[in-house]
Length: 204
Image 1 (cartoon, rainbow, N blue to C red):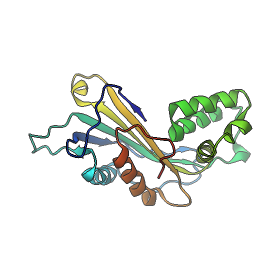
Image 2: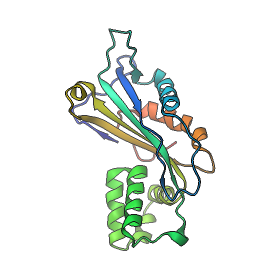
Image 3: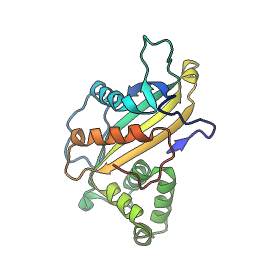
């Protein structure tokens, strides 16, 4: 997770009130089957419900005492298993897809390390360096559900300025479960750790 270094962490006694905006579902990778559609409005409703007891609360337009200060932008979806018979890592688009997946499941730092290992033809050593890397690599190559949350400063947006306060990613191997079945796990996990620095071992 990335966080603005001067941003204080809210508490359950003093939560941050926010607006939430769900983007449309986005599947990436070698899509051999379509994900069951989940509307943005249904997704937003589930996310707002998950926030009920978190440090971030959905703002109520009628509540003048708790005005929103942040906008949470939500993106979610699935990247699908890579079929090796049709995949060529030497191809520029395939290479970019691997790095993009690495960023989705492991963040920018991990993606940079993954990309360097690809360039150095050193993937065997890199993937087996520890259990976390091995797990993330498995998610890169196989069916994986993900949730991205980015917090934007509301006052800056009103001035047509984009000020990112923090961003987080949560992903999990599908294990033959549908996105609809996995979604409550992703949302409830996200609600617990919004705005917090998290250890990469924390996964749904």
